[in-house]
Image (cartoon, rainbow over all chains, first blue to last red; front, side, top):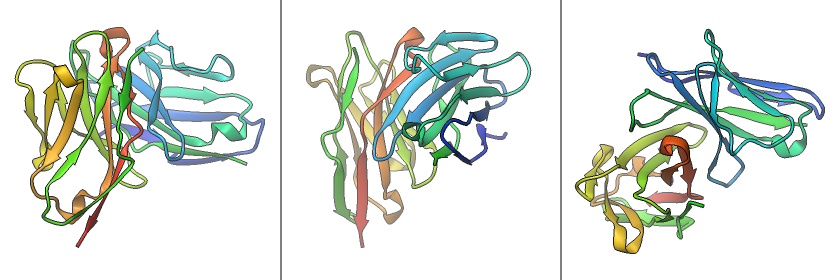
Length: 114
Length: 114
């Protein structure tokens, strides 16, 4: 049973470009979460999605960032017009629909903005 | 708002020695508490979790943690550390919608001396 998959593992963008990060949850998981980890810091919650719905986006920056989890295919975290401060590791996690369930994390995508 | 404090940024112990990593949380209701471990360049692996019931929880790799409501603490312990335990350890509390948005501490980096 494959774990949470993220791609690409490393992504380099120039300032002003767009970054698209993909996350495929574990089989049977319908809940996806995105977290950002800045260097030497803990993870910060960004957004929680279920299929075709954003449940909690309280941690998402108000501009340039968006996330989706379509009926078919992976969840996408999209960052428009990237800036140097967006350089970080972005982790995706997934969980089952149960009332109380643990989150399984992917290996992360390390975004570098030049 | 919820928060998690890990007061020790960096800890060094000798192999075979006991270990305790501290975690204090702030949350208005009964917390869902987690300990995760992260090896360099990797994602997070769940060590153990507390939702309710017995306040002493057992996890993987010989780790345990004790929930103390009166002290708002959830300290992680291991009786005998192995060199392979060297990693970064994160404490987290579940909050937000369905308590699914995890708030992480800033982490404790563990070094193990031979």
